[in-house]
Length: 396
Image 1 (cartoon, rainbow, N blue to C red):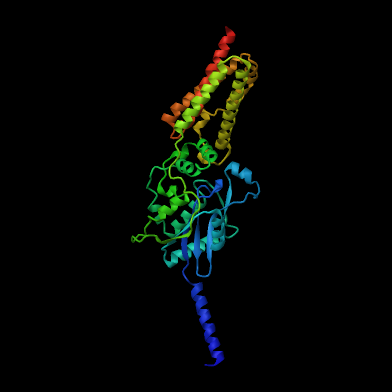
Image 2 (tube, rainbow, N blue to C red):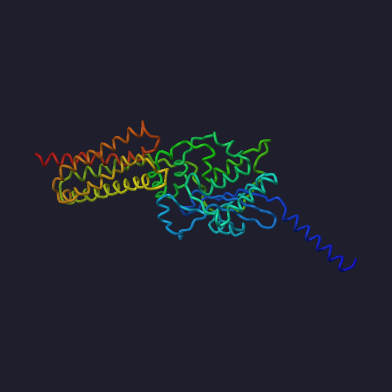
């Protein structure tokens, strides 16, 4: 066979192979990444993998930049911007491998048209002018964005099969469960979340957690009964402890701490002597400062931010900003003099509002706040009683 003819045949074969590869239906997988060590990685992560036969690209909705203009201000106002980023699969896996985080792929059973539409929608979403989105911890995060893209590709089947189903989980219970390895984070979220975080979630909203979305996708069926997930594969084995499976139970510990704190204040404020007096004033200064500052923080989240899950927080009845005004009574307590009469009345008012929190907890709101009532209310009651006794003693 002439050399020129063989060359033409080879060129035709190469062109046919290229055309077949270029027009191949993309394979798409849901990637689920185990929780990481950093606080922003405690909920885990997910992304969509698109493999068109030439390259495997990961579409990741979880990117943010600490260096973006006014990052802190946006964070405080609840206006954070996140971005859809695209990277090769190998580069993405190398990052998670370095962190010891496991990665699992669930390959989707999509027809050619649906897979092609999903791949094209992701590519368009990743364009610089479209990549940024307004982030919300529960309603618009890396997992809910992936969920929404999958629902579009499935013609709405994902939402139809999950929208009316609930297991009684809440945004609070899931947030506390996953953040519990970092106690400061879990306690801060528990205190800062308002009643909206305690509404029972359906399976659709549970999918704000990446692992919950992965579990849900394993149950979804096409209209003809075929599973949406064709196959699963472990891309990286985890080297980290598994995520907690239960929401932490703190009520008994909070009650013990509340009784001990109230008892310490009662003992120090009742005893005579310079050292107990000053120790009591110091402990009281810490208590009032923490309560007042925390109350101002809750008010700011409610009135000045877009953090809707923190609005109407009934913990304001316990962390009362009026405690900051009581700090002016400390010099008298420090020096062993009777405090001003108005301070006893104000402390009694603060304690009465704290007692009102019991009624609000049982009758008015669904907010899970009994933990904080047990922790804070005993000290309010003790302080009000002690200041009223001090005022009575002065009158006598």
